Amino acid sequence: MVIDTALPKATYIRLSLLLFFQNRAFYIYLLICGIITVYALSTETYLLLLIAWLPYAGYLIAGLLATWRNASDKTLPFLLPTRYTFQNQEILTKTDLGEGKFKWTDFVQWRSLANCYVLFHQQGFILAIPRSDVKNRTAFERMLNEKIKR
Image (cartoon, rainbow, N blue to C red; front, side, top):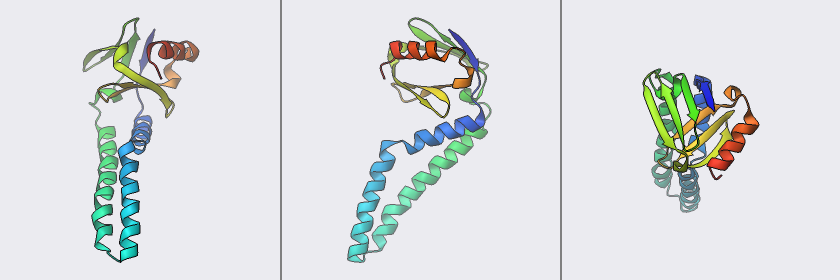
């Protein structure tokens, strides 16, 4: 199966923000900030609020800025027209910048997010294919279910 596609900038931003806000560390730190907030307010140690929430705000701002900066960089491969060739043992990708080859066994899961099929690689990166560019979604999802255990 071959899919020619390009991830639109708006879709990239939406997908990036969804993945950013689904990060487990984001919510663990939020829970810690909540506990520190309760403690700081009950003991009137207000400096703890600054110590807890300033890094959290910095993390949040840095994530939003990185998303915006990446979406504006037209040389990044995920925003270029890409040909995905899905073979029996691997996935081949091709853009104007180069080619890639990924084994099916290296993907740990797939999900449908932001109107894209998102394939999660064990090394932390993703392949995102807009659903609108997949001609036979039923066959594609069947292939993903066979090749990648959800």
